[in-house]
Image (cartoon, rainbow, N blue to C red; front, side, top):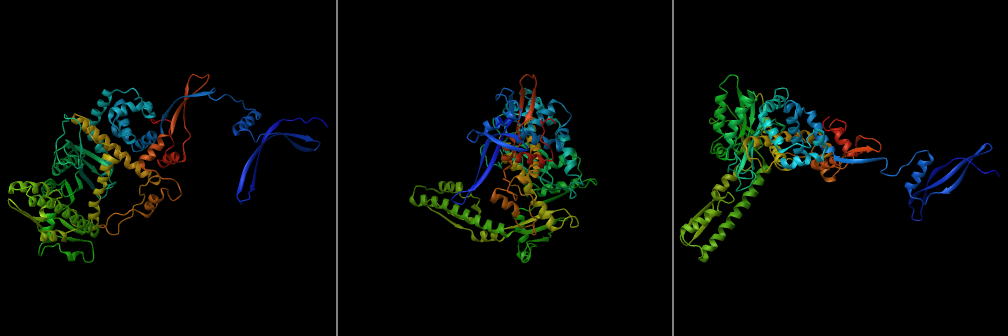
Length: 592
Protein backbone atom coordinates (compact mmCIF):
# COMPACT_ATOMS: atom_id res chain seq x y z
CA UNK A 1 0.00 0.00 0.00
CA UNK A 2 1.52 3.38 -0.91
CA UNK A 3 2.52 5.70 1.92
CA UNK A 4 -0.15 8.25 2.65
CA UNK A 5 0.87 11.87 2.14
CA UNK A 6 -0.82 15.22 2.80
CA UNK A 7 -0.85 18.06 5.27
CA UNK A 8 -1.91 17.44 8.82
CA UNK A 9 -4.36 19.59 10.75
CA UNK A 10 -5.90 19.84 14.23
CA UNK A 11 -9.45 18.59 14.76
CA UNK A 12 -11.49 19.12 17.94
CA UNK A 13 -14.33 16.72 18.66
CA UNK A 14 -16.95 17.61 21.25
CA UNK A 15 -18.91 14.76 22.79
CA UNK A 16 -21.57 14.49 25.47
CA UNK A 17 -22.72 11.57 27.56
CA UNK A 18 -25.04 10.92 30.47
CA UNK A 19 -23.39 9.48 33.58
CA UNK A 20 -24.90 7.05 36.08
CA UNK A 21 -26.39 9.94 38.08
CA UNK A 22 -28.24 11.16 35.01
CA UNK A 23 -26.13 14.29 34.58
CA UNK A 24 -25.14 15.34 31.09
CA UNK A 25 -21.40 15.92 30.72
CA UNK A 26 -19.45 17.38 27.83
CA UNK A 27 -15.79 16.90 26.95
CA UNK A 28 -13.55 17.83 24.04
CA UNK A 29 -10.88 15.70 22.36
CA UNK A 30 -8.16 17.05 20.07
CA UNK A 31 -6.52 15.01 17.29
CA UNK A 32 -3.79 15.56 14.72
CA UNK A 33 -5.20 14.23 11.47
CA UNK A 34 -4.13 13.85 7.86
CA UNK A 35 -6.59 13.94 4.98
CA UNK A 36 -5.75 12.02 1.82
CA UNK A 37 -7.48 10.78 -1.30
CA UNK A 38 -7.89 7.06 -1.95
CA UNK A 39 -9.07 6.89 -5.49
CA UNK A 40 -12.33 8.82 -5.60
CA UNK A 41 -12.79 8.73 -1.83
CA UNK A 42 -11.43 11.22 0.70
CA UNK A 43 -10.21 9.56 3.86
CA UNK A 44 -8.88 10.76 7.26
CA UNK A 45 -6.05 9.29 9.25
CA UNK A 46 -5.42 10.10 12.90
CA UNK A 47 -1.73 10.80 13.31
CA UNK A 48 -1.79 11.60 17.05
CA UNK A 49 -4.15 12.09 19.96
CA UNK A 50 -3.51 15.56 21.40
CA UNK A 51 -6.17 15.41 24.11
CA UNK A 52 -3.63 15.12 26.92
CA UNK A 53 -1.74 18.27 25.88
CA UNK A 54 -2.49 21.67 27.51
CA UNK A 55 -5.06 23.68 25.50
CA UNK A 56 -2.53 26.44 24.81
CA UNK A 57 -0.13 23.88 23.28
CA UNK A 58 -2.90 22.62 21.00
CA UNK A 59 -3.72 26.20 20.02
CA UNK A 60 -0.06 26.91 19.23
CA UNK A 61 0.22 23.76 17.11
CA UNK A 62 -2.97 24.65 15.23
CA UNK A 63 -1.76 28.21 14.57
CA UNK A 64 1.62 26.90 13.29
CA UNK A 65 -0.03 24.42 10.96
CA UNK A 66 -2.15 27.25 9.55
CA UNK A 67 1.01 29.15 8.62
CA UNK A 68 1.17 31.66 11.45
CA UNK A 69 4.57 32.58 12.86
CA UNK A 70 4.70 32.36 16.62
CA UNK A 71 7.05 34.45 18.70
CA UNK A 72 7.96 34.27 22.36
CA UNK A 73 5.69 36.22 24.70
CA UNK A 74 6.98 39.75 25.13
CA UNK A 75 9.36 39.59 22.19
CA UNK A 76 6.99 41.32 19.72
CA UNK A 77 5.89 44.38 21.72
CA UNK A 78 6.05 45.85 25.21
CA UNK A 79 3.52 47.87 27.21
CA UNK A 80 5.61 50.77 28.44
CA UNK A 81 2.89 52.30 30.64
CA UNK A 82 -0.73 51.74 31.64
CA UNK A 83 -2.85 54.58 33.04
CA UNK A 84 -6.42 54.59 34.48
CA UNK A 85 -8.62 56.21 31.87
CA UNK A 86 -12.30 55.26 31.90
CA UNK A 87 -13.45 57.31 34.92
CA UNK A 88 -11.82 60.60 33.88
CA UNK A 89 -12.82 60.05 30.24
CA UNK A 90 -16.48 59.59 31.19
CA UNK A 91 -16.60 62.69 33.39
CA UNK A 92 -14.70 64.73 30.79
CA UNK A 93 -17.17 63.56 28.12
CA UNK A 94 -20.09 64.77 30.24
CA UNK A 95 -18.30 68.07 30.91
CA UNK A 96 -17.96 68.67 27.18
CA UNK A 97 -21.55 67.65 26.52
CA UNK A 98 -22.65 70.33 28.99
CA UNK A 99 -20.30 72.91 27.47
CA UNK A 100 -18.32 73.27 30.68
CA UNK A 101 -14.98 74.21 29.04
CA UNK A 102 -16.59 77.10 27.14
CA UNK A 103 -18.52 78.06 30.27
CA UNK A 104 -15.26 78.45 32.23
CA UNK A 105 -13.72 80.89 29.79
CA UNK A 106 -11.29 81.22 26.88
CA UNK A 107 -9.02 78.31 26.07
CA UNK A 108 -5.65 78.24 27.78
CA UNK A 109 -3.60 76.57 30.45
CA UNK A 110 -5.51 78.15 33.33
CA UNK A 111 -8.80 76.89 31.93
CA UNK A 112 -7.31 73.40 31.51
CA UNK A 113 -6.18 73.40 35.13
CA UNK A 114 -9.59 74.51 36.40
CA UNK A 115 -11.34 71.92 34.22
CA UNK A 116 -9.00 69.24 35.59
CA UNK A 117 -9.71 70.41 39.15
CA UNK A 118 -13.46 70.09 38.56
CA UNK A 119 -13.16 66.64 36.96
CA UNK A 120 -10.77 65.50 39.70
CA UNK A 121 -13.20 66.66 42.38
CA UNK A 122 -15.85 64.36 40.86
CA UNK A 123 -13.53 61.38 40.40
CA UNK A 124 -11.23 61.68 43.41
CA UNK A 125 -12.14 64.43 45.90
CA UNK A 126 -8.86 65.22 47.62
CA UNK A 127 -6.93 68.36 48.65
CA UNK A 128 -5.33 70.34 45.82
CA UNK A 129 -1.77 69.21 46.55
CA UNK A 130 -2.83 65.56 46.55
CA UNK A 131 -4.71 66.11 43.30
CA UNK A 132 -1.64 67.75 41.76
CA UNK A 133 0.46 64.67 42.57
CA UNK A 134 -2.27 62.36 41.20
CA UNK A 135 -2.58 63.96 37.75
CA UNK A 136 0.50 62.24 36.24
CA UNK A 137 -0.98 58.87 37.27
CA UNK A 138 -4.07 59.26 35.06
CA UNK A 139 -4.73 60.09 31.44
CA UNK A 140 -6.35 63.35 32.59
CA UNK A 141 -3.05 64.96 33.55
CA UNK A 142 -1.25 63.53 30.51
CA UNK A 143 -3.87 64.59 27.93
CA UNK A 144 -4.28 68.12 29.29
CA UNK A 145 -0.53 68.57 29.66
CA UNK A 146 -0.77 68.99 33.42
CA UNK A 147 1.57 66.22 34.54
CA UNK A 148 4.20 68.83 35.38
CA UNK A 149 1.88 71.55 36.74
CA UNK A 150 3.17 73.41 39.78
CA UNK A 151 1.42 74.50 42.95
CA UNK A 152 1.70 78.14 41.92
CA UNK A 153 -0.05 77.38 38.63
CA UNK A 154 -2.94 75.71 40.44
CA UNK A 155 -3.40 78.65 42.79
CA UNK A 156 -3.13 81.13 39.89
CA UNK A 157 -5.84 79.17 38.05
CA UNK A 158 -8.07 79.28 41.14
CA UNK A 159 -7.62 83.05 41.32
CA UNK A 160 -8.54 83.27 37.62
CA UNK A 161 -11.68 81.19 38.28
CA UNK A 162 -12.72 83.43 41.20
CA UNK A 163 -12.55 86.45 38.89
CA UNK A 164 -14.76 84.68 36.35
CA UNK A 165 -17.45 83.55 38.81
CA UNK A 166 -19.99 86.18 37.78
CA UNK A 167 -20.02 85.43 34.01
CA UNK A 168 -20.04 81.67 34.71
CA UNK A 169 -23.09 81.95 36.97
CA UNK A 170 -24.81 84.35 34.59
CA UNK A 171 -24.59 81.73 31.81
CA UNK A 172 -25.90 79.00 34.11
CA UNK A 173 -28.78 81.23 35.22
CA UNK A 174 -29.64 82.04 31.63
CA UNK A 175 -29.71 78.32 30.87
CA UNK A 176 -31.74 77.08 33.84
CA UNK A 177 -33.68 80.03 35.26
CA UNK A 178 -34.84 81.58 31.98
CA UNK A 179 -38.57 81.33 31.12
CA UNK A 180 -38.04 78.66 28.44
CA UNK A 181 -36.30 76.21 30.79
CA UNK A 182 -38.11 77.35 33.95
CA UNK A 183 -41.66 78.49 33.09
CA UNK A 184 -42.57 78.90 36.73
CA UNK A 185 -39.61 81.27 37.21
CA UNK A 186 -38.83 79.57 40.52
CA UNK A 187 -35.46 79.19 42.27
CA UNK A 188 -34.41 77.54 45.52
CA UNK A 189 -31.92 78.96 48.01
CA UNK A 190 -30.50 77.50 51.19
CA UNK A 191 -27.50 78.02 53.43
CA UNK A 192 -25.10 75.57 55.04
CA UNK A 193 -21.70 75.62 56.73
CA UNK A 194 -18.31 73.88 56.53
CA UNK A 195 -15.53 73.92 59.07
CA UNK A 196 -12.04 75.19 58.28
CA UNK A 197 -8.58 74.11 59.38
CA UNK A 198 -5.89 76.45 60.63
CA UNK A 199 -6.30 79.82 62.27
CA UNK A 200 -5.67 82.26 59.41
CA UNK A 201 -8.67 81.89 57.11
CA UNK A 202 -10.04 85.36 56.41
CA UNK A 203 -13.68 84.19 56.30
CA UNK A 204 -13.52 81.81 59.26
CA UNK A 205 -15.69 82.64 62.27
CA UNK A 206 -17.56 80.83 64.98
CA UNK A 207 -21.24 80.44 64.31
CA UNK A 208 -24.10 77.98 64.25
CA UNK A 209 -22.67 74.77 62.78
CA UNK A 210 -25.10 72.91 60.57
CA UNK A 211 -22.65 70.01 60.56
CA UNK A 212 -22.64 69.59 64.32
CA UNK A 213 -18.90 70.34 64.36
CA UNK A 214 -18.72 72.18 67.65
CA UNK A 215 -15.73 74.26 68.67
CA UNK A 216 -14.44 74.85 65.11
CA UNK A 217 -14.39 78.00 63.06
CA UNK A 218 -16.37 77.75 59.87
CA UNK A 219 -17.44 79.41 56.67
CA UNK A 220 -20.98 79.47 55.32
CA UNK A 221 -22.12 79.21 51.74
CA UNK A 222 -25.50 79.50 50.09
CA UNK A 223 -26.50 77.64 46.92
CA UNK A 224 -29.04 78.87 44.37
CA UNK A 225 -30.62 76.14 42.23
CA UNK A 226 -33.45 75.62 39.80
CA UNK A 227 -36.50 73.66 41.08
CA UNK A 228 -34.92 70.33 40.08
CA UNK A 229 -31.82 71.08 42.14
CA UNK A 230 -29.34 71.97 39.38
CA UNK A 231 -26.87 74.36 41.04
CA UNK A 232 -26.71 77.75 39.37
CA UNK A 233 -24.81 80.03 41.74
CA UNK A 234 -23.06 79.97 45.10
CA UNK A 235 -21.95 82.63 47.54
CA UNK A 236 -19.54 82.21 50.43
CA UNK A 237 -20.07 84.12 53.68
CA UNK A 238 -18.28 84.56 56.96
CA UNK A 239 -18.97 81.78 59.44
CA UNK A 240 -21.19 83.90 61.67
CA UNK A 241 -23.55 85.15 58.94
CA UNK A 242 -27.25 84.79 59.76
CA UNK A 243 -29.64 83.18 57.28
CA UNK A 244 -31.62 86.40 56.58
CA UNK A 245 -28.40 88.32 55.82
CA UNK A 246 -27.34 85.63 53.36
CA UNK A 247 -30.75 85.81 51.69
CA UNK A 248 -30.45 89.58 51.33
CA UNK A 249 -27.10 89.19 49.60
CA UNK A 250 -28.29 86.47 47.21
CA UNK A 251 -31.22 88.67 46.15
CA UNK A 252 -28.72 91.39 45.26
CA UNK A 253 -26.68 88.83 43.31
CA UNK A 254 -29.76 87.66 41.40
CA UNK A 255 -30.81 91.17 40.47
CA UNK A 256 -27.48 92.89 39.82
CA UNK A 257 -25.07 90.14 38.78
CA UNK A 258 -27.31 87.51 37.21
CA UNK A 259 -29.49 90.22 35.67
CA UNK A 260 -32.75 88.55 36.66
CA UNK A 261 -35.61 90.87 37.57
CA UNK A 262 -38.44 88.36 37.94
CA UNK A 263 -38.18 85.25 40.11
CA UNK A 264 -40.03 83.34 42.82
CA UNK A 265 -37.59 82.54 45.63
CA UNK A 266 -38.18 79.49 47.81
CA UNK A 267 -36.50 79.36 51.22
CA UNK A 268 -37.13 77.96 54.67
CA UNK A 269 -38.69 79.87 57.57
CA UNK A 270 -35.34 80.94 58.98
CA UNK A 271 -34.21 82.30 55.62
CA UNK A 272 -37.14 84.34 54.33
CA UNK A 273 -38.29 86.22 57.40
CA UNK A 274 -40.84 89.01 57.69
CA UNK A 275 -38.05 91.59 57.45
CA UNK A 276 -36.72 89.98 54.26
CA UNK A 277 -40.21 89.94 52.77
CA UNK A 278 -40.58 93.66 53.54
CA UNK A 279 -37.28 94.22 51.73
CA UNK A 280 -38.57 92.29 48.72
CA UNK A 281 -41.70 94.42 48.70
CA UNK A 282 -39.54 97.54 48.53
CA UNK A 283 -37.62 96.09 45.61
CA UNK A 284 -40.89 95.33 43.86
CA UNK A 285 -41.81 99.01 43.95
CA UNK A 286 -39.61 99.22 40.86
CA UNK A 287 -41.97 98.40 37.96
CA UNK A 288 -39.26 96.32 36.28
CA UNK A 289 -38.72 94.12 39.33
CA UNK A 290 -40.97 91.32 40.55
CA UNK A 291 -39.57 89.02 43.23
CA UNK A 292 -42.02 86.56 44.76
CA UNK A 293 -41.51 84.16 47.64
CA UNK A 294 -42.57 80.85 49.09
CA UNK A 295 -41.62 80.18 52.70
CA UNK A 296 -43.13 78.87 55.93
CA UNK A 297 -44.33 80.40 59.17
CA UNK A 298 -42.58 79.83 62.48
CA UNK A 299 -44.30 77.95 65.29
CA UNK A 300 -45.43 81.06 67.27
CA UNK A 301 -47.07 82.50 64.15
CA UNK A 302 -48.85 79.20 63.51
CA UNK A 303 -50.05 79.11 67.13
CA UNK A 304 -51.43 82.62 66.73
CA UNK A 305 -53.44 81.55 63.68
CA UNK A 306 -54.86 78.60 65.65
CA UNK A 307 -55.98 80.57 68.71
CA UNK A 308 -59.68 80.81 69.54
CA UNK A 309 -61.51 81.93 66.42
CA UNK A 310 -58.43 82.16 64.22
CA UNK A 311 -58.52 80.87 60.63
CA UNK A 312 -56.45 77.77 61.41
CA UNK A 313 -58.83 75.22 62.90
CA UNK A 314 -58.48 71.45 63.04
CA UNK A 315 -61.81 71.05 61.22
CA UNK A 316 -60.05 72.23 58.06
CA UNK A 317 -58.33 68.85 57.88
CA UNK A 318 -61.40 66.64 58.33
CA UNK A 319 -61.52 65.70 54.66
CA UNK A 320 -58.19 66.91 53.24
CA UNK A 321 -54.62 67.56 54.29
CA UNK A 322 -54.28 71.13 53.05
CA UNK A 323 -56.41 74.23 52.93
CA UNK A 324 -55.92 77.83 51.89
CA UNK A 325 -56.60 80.47 54.55
CA UNK A 326 -56.01 84.19 54.98
CA UNK A 327 -55.22 86.57 57.81
CA UNK A 328 -54.96 90.38 58.10
CA UNK A 329 -51.36 90.06 59.32
CA UNK A 330 -50.38 88.84 55.84
CA UNK A 331 -51.92 91.29 53.38
CA UNK A 332 -51.53 90.39 49.74
CA UNK A 333 -50.29 86.90 50.62
CA UNK A 334 -51.77 83.44 50.50
CA UNK A 335 -51.47 81.02 53.43
CA UNK A 336 -51.50 77.30 52.72
CA UNK A 337 -52.12 75.22 55.86
CA UNK A 338 -50.99 71.58 55.68
CA UNK A 339 -51.24 68.64 58.02
CA UNK A 340 -48.98 65.62 57.65
CA UNK A 341 -50.27 62.73 59.85
CA UNK A 342 -46.98 60.82 59.55
CA UNK A 343 -45.05 63.88 60.71
CA UNK A 344 -47.51 64.38 63.57
CA UNK A 345 -46.98 60.83 64.82
CA UNK A 346 -43.20 61.20 64.58
CA UNK A 347 -43.17 64.48 66.50
CA UNK A 348 -45.38 63.00 69.21
CA UNK A 349 -43.03 60.03 69.58
CA UNK A 350 -39.93 62.21 69.62
CA UNK A 351 -41.37 64.65 72.17
CA UNK A 352 -42.28 61.80 74.48
CA UNK A 353 -38.74 60.41 74.33
CA UNK A 354 -37.11 63.81 74.89
CA UNK A 355 -39.38 64.57 77.84
CA UNK A 356 -38.45 61.24 79.42
CA UNK A 357 -34.75 61.90 78.78
CA UNK A 358 -35.01 65.35 80.40
CA UNK A 359 -36.81 63.89 83.42
CA UNK A 360 -34.02 61.35 83.81
CA UNK A 361 -31.44 64.13 83.96
CA UNK A 362 -33.50 66.09 86.49
CA UNK A 363 -34.03 62.93 88.57
CA UNK A 364 -30.27 62.55 88.88
CA UNK A 365 -29.95 66.07 90.26
CA UNK A 366 -32.93 65.58 92.59
CA UNK A 367 -31.28 62.42 93.96
CA UNK A 368 -28.10 64.38 94.73
CA UNK A 369 -30.18 67.02 96.55
CA UNK A 370 -32.00 64.33 98.55
CA UNK A 371 -28.71 62.71 99.58
CA UNK A 372 -27.32 66.12 100.62
CA UNK A 373 -24.40 66.09 98.16
CA UNK A 374 -25.84 69.13 96.37
CA UNK A 375 -27.17 72.01 98.46
CA UNK A 376 -27.87 75.69 98.09
CA UNK A 377 -30.44 77.18 95.75
CA UNK A 378 -27.73 78.73 93.57
CA UNK A 379 -25.76 75.50 93.15
CA UNK A 380 -28.90 73.47 92.51
CA UNK A 381 -30.14 76.05 90.00
CA UNK A 382 -26.82 75.96 88.15
CA UNK A 383 -26.96 72.17 87.90
CA UNK A 384 -30.55 72.27 86.66
CA UNK A 385 -29.72 74.99 84.13
CA UNK A 386 -27.01 72.80 82.58
CA UNK A 387 -29.36 69.92 81.79
CA UNK A 388 -32.96 71.11 81.58
CA UNK A 389 -32.70 72.44 78.03
CA UNK A 390 -30.24 69.89 76.69
CA UNK A 391 -33.03 68.37 74.61
CA UNK A 392 -34.92 71.66 74.12
CA UNK A 393 -37.61 70.55 76.56
CA UNK A 394 -37.07 73.07 79.36
CA UNK A 395 -40.17 75.00 78.27
CA UNK A 396 -42.32 72.00 79.21
CA UNK A 397 -41.25 71.77 82.87
CA UNK A 398 -42.05 73.70 86.06
CA UNK A 399 -39.23 73.58 88.60
CA UNK A 400 -39.14 74.72 92.24
CA UNK A 401 -35.76 75.13 93.93
CA UNK A 402 -34.86 75.85 97.55
CA UNK A 403 -31.61 75.45 99.45
CA UNK A 404 -32.43 71.83 100.24
CA UNK A 405 -35.08 70.70 97.75
CA UNK A 406 -35.73 70.35 94.04
CA UNK A 407 -39.15 69.54 92.66
CA UNK A 408 -40.19 69.46 89.02
CA UNK A 409 -43.25 68.53 87.00
CA UNK A 410 -44.37 68.63 83.42
CA UNK A 411 -46.36 71.59 82.14
CA UNK A 412 -49.01 69.32 80.64
CA UNK A 413 -51.19 72.17 79.40
CA UNK A 414 -48.33 73.55 77.33
CA UNK A 415 -47.40 70.09 76.09
CA UNK A 416 -50.99 69.46 74.99
CA UNK A 417 -51.20 72.85 73.27
CA UNK A 418 -48.04 72.12 71.31
CA UNK A 419 -49.22 68.58 70.49
CA UNK A 420 -52.39 69.94 68.90
CA UNK A 421 -50.23 71.52 66.18
CA UNK A 422 -48.09 68.44 65.56
CA UNK A 423 -47.69 67.80 61.84
CA UNK A 424 -49.15 71.19 60.92
CA UNK A 425 -47.17 73.74 58.94
CA UNK A 426 -48.28 76.86 57.12
CA UNK A 427 -46.72 78.17 53.94
CA UNK A 428 -46.88 81.84 52.97
CA UNK A 429 -46.49 83.04 49.43
CA UNK A 430 -46.98 86.02 47.18
CA UNK A 431 -47.68 83.85 44.12
CA UNK A 432 -51.25 84.38 42.92
CA UNK A 433 -53.74 81.53 42.59
CA UNK A 434 -53.80 81.85 38.81
CA UNK A 435 -50.12 80.94 38.66
CA UNK A 436 -49.92 78.19 41.29
CA UNK A 437 -52.67 76.31 43.08
CA UNK A 438 -52.21 75.28 46.75
CA UNK A 439 -50.77 71.88 45.76
CA UNK A 440 -48.22 73.64 43.53
CA UNK A 441 -47.16 75.88 46.40
CA UNK A 442 -46.59 72.84 48.63
CA UNK A 443 -44.61 71.07 45.92
CA UNK A 444 -42.53 74.18 45.33
CA UNK A 445 -41.63 74.41 49.01
CA UNK A 446 -40.85 70.70 49.24
CA UNK A 447 -38.41 71.11 46.35
CA UNK A 448 -36.01 72.50 48.98
CA UNK A 449 -35.18 68.83 49.53
CA UNK A 450 -33.32 69.05 46.21
CA UNK A 451 -30.96 71.67 47.66
CA UNK A 452 -30.42 69.46 50.70
CA UNK A 453 -29.49 66.65 48.34
CA UNK A 454 -26.96 68.96 46.66
CA UNK A 455 -25.47 69.76 50.06
CA UNK A 456 -25.06 66.03 50.73
CA UNK A 457 -23.35 65.62 47.35
CA UNK A 458 -21.02 68.57 47.99
CA UNK A 459 -20.19 67.85 51.63
CA UNK A 460 -20.29 64.11 52.17
CA UNK A 461 -21.55 61.74 49.49
CA UNK A 462 -19.39 62.64 46.50
CA UNK A 463 -17.30 65.80 46.69
CA UNK A 464 -15.96 66.00 50.25
CA UNK A 465 -15.80 69.80 50.41
CA UNK A 466 -15.02 69.74 54.14
CA UNK A 467 -12.81 70.80 55.79
CA UNK A 468 -11.59 73.99 54.14
CA UNK A 469 -7.79 74.15 53.93
CA UNK A 470 -7.40 77.53 52.18
CA UNK A 471 -6.54 80.81 53.86
CA UNK A 472 -7.33 83.66 51.42
CA UNK A 473 -10.99 84.49 50.88
CA UNK A 474 -10.74 84.34 47.07
CA UNK A 475 -9.19 80.86 47.31
CA UNK A 476 -11.98 79.69 49.61
CA UNK A 477 -14.55 81.07 47.16
CA UNK A 478 -12.78 79.39 44.23
CA UNK A 479 -12.71 76.07 46.12
CA UNK A 480 -16.45 76.24 46.80
CA UNK A 481 -17.14 77.25 43.18
CA UNK A 482 -15.13 74.22 41.96
CA UNK A 483 -17.29 72.03 44.18
CA UNK A 484 -20.45 73.68 42.81
CA UNK A 485 -19.37 72.99 39.21
CA UNK A 486 -18.49 69.42 40.17
CA UNK A 487 -21.95 69.07 41.75
CA UNK A 488 -23.43 70.33 38.45
CA UNK A 489 -21.57 67.54 36.66
CA UNK A 490 -22.65 64.90 39.17
CA UNK A 491 -26.29 66.00 38.89
CA UNK A 492 -26.23 65.16 35.18
CA UNK A 493 -24.07 62.04 35.57
CA UNK A 494 -26.39 60.55 38.18
CA UNK A 495 -29.35 61.18 35.91
CA UNK A 496 -27.63 59.61 32.89
CA UNK A 497 -26.37 56.58 34.83
CA UNK A 498 -29.58 55.97 36.77
CA UNK A 499 -30.23 52.66 34.90
CA UNK A 500 -26.87 51.32 36.16
CA UNK A 501 -27.14 52.58 39.75
CA UNK A 502 -29.63 52.51 42.60
CA UNK A 503 -30.99 55.95 41.64
CA UNK A 504 -34.75 56.03 41.23
CA UNK A 505 -35.24 56.54 37.51
CA UNK A 506 -38.94 57.44 37.66
CA UNK A 507 -39.96 58.78 41.11
CA UNK A 508 -43.76 58.53 41.38
CA UNK A 509 -45.82 61.69 41.37
CA UNK A 510 -47.56 62.23 44.70
CA UNK A 511 -51.34 62.23 44.56
CA UNK A 512 -51.28 64.13 47.83
CA UNK A 513 -48.53 66.81 47.88
CA UNK A 514 -48.49 66.81 51.70
CA UNK A 515 -47.69 63.10 51.90
CA UNK A 516 -44.05 62.02 52.24
CA UNK A 517 -42.14 61.23 49.06
CA UNK A 518 -42.09 57.57 48.06
CA UNK A 519 -39.72 55.51 45.93
CA UNK A 520 -41.04 53.78 42.85
CA UNK A 521 -41.61 49.98 42.95
CA UNK A 522 -38.85 49.65 40.35
CA UNK A 523 -36.37 51.40 42.65
CA UNK A 524 -37.38 49.19 45.57
CA UNK A 525 -36.90 46.14 43.37
CA UNK A 526 -33.45 47.31 42.31
CA UNK A 527 -32.44 47.85 45.92
CA UNK A 528 -33.67 44.42 47.02
CA UNK A 529 -32.17 42.45 44.13
CA UNK A 530 -29.01 44.49 43.49
CA UNK A 531 -29.83 43.92 39.81
CA UNK A 532 -32.00 45.73 37.31
CA UNK A 533 -35.04 44.22 35.62
CA UNK A 534 -32.82 42.60 32.97
CA UNK A 535 -30.51 40.93 35.49
CA UNK A 536 -27.63 43.39 35.10
CA UNK A 537 -25.73 44.05 38.35
CA UNK A 538 -26.12 47.53 39.87
CA UNK A 539 -23.45 49.70 41.44
CA UNK A 540 -23.36 52.82 43.55
CA UNK A 541 -22.36 56.02 41.77
CA UNK A 542 -18.91 55.91 43.36
CA UNK A 543 -18.65 52.18 42.65
CA UNK A 544 -19.37 52.80 38.97
CA UNK A 545 -16.62 55.40 38.78
CA UNK A 546 -14.22 52.97 40.44
CA UNK A 547 -15.14 50.30 37.90
CA UNK A 548 -14.61 52.72 35.01
CA UNK A 549 -11.13 53.43 36.39
CA UNK A 550 -10.14 49.84 35.53
CA UNK A 551 -10.49 50.72 31.84
CA UNK A 552 -6.86 51.62 31.14
CA UNK A 553 -5.03 53.19 28.24
CA UNK A 554 -1.82 51.37 27.46
CA UNK A 555 1.23 52.73 25.63
CA UNK A 556 2.41 49.90 23.36
CA UNK A 557 5.84 49.89 21.71
CA UNK A 558 6.48 47.32 19.00
CA UNK A 559 9.99 45.98 18.69
CA UNK A 560 11.88 47.64 15.92
CA UNK A 561 9.66 50.75 16.07
CA UNK A 562 10.58 54.01 17.74
CA UNK A 563 7.08 55.24 18.51
CA UNK A 564 4.46 54.19 21.05
CA UNK A 565 0.87 53.45 20.14
CA UNK A 566 -1.91 54.17 22.69
CA UNK A 567 -4.34 51.26 22.95
CA UNK A 568 -7.38 50.96 25.22
CA UNK A 569 -7.95 47.84 27.24
CA UNK A 570 -10.93 45.76 26.17
CA UNK A 571 -13.89 47.43 27.94
CA UNK A 572 -16.30 45.39 30.00
CA UNK A 573 -20.00 45.29 29.27
CA UNK A 574 -20.71 47.78 32.08
CA UNK A 575 -18.01 50.14 30.86
CA UNK A 576 -19.44 50.14 27.34
CA UNK A 577 -22.92 50.70 28.69
CA UNK A 578 -21.81 53.63 30.86
CA UNK A 579 -20.48 55.45 27.80
CA UNK A 580 -23.54 54.46 25.75
CA UNK A 581 -25.74 56.12 28.38
CA UNK A 582 -23.64 59.27 27.94
CA UNK A 583 -24.35 58.97 24.20
CA UNK A 584 -20.65 58.93 23.36
CA UNK A 585 -18.06 56.45 22.14
CA UNK A 586 -15.23 55.56 24.48
CA UNK A 587 -12.63 58.22 23.63
CA UNK A 588 -8.94 57.45 23.35
CA UNK A 589 -8.10 60.74 25.03
CA UNK A 590 -9.81 62.93 27.65
CA UNK A 591 -8.91 66.00 25.60
CA UNK A 592 -11.08 64.87 22.67
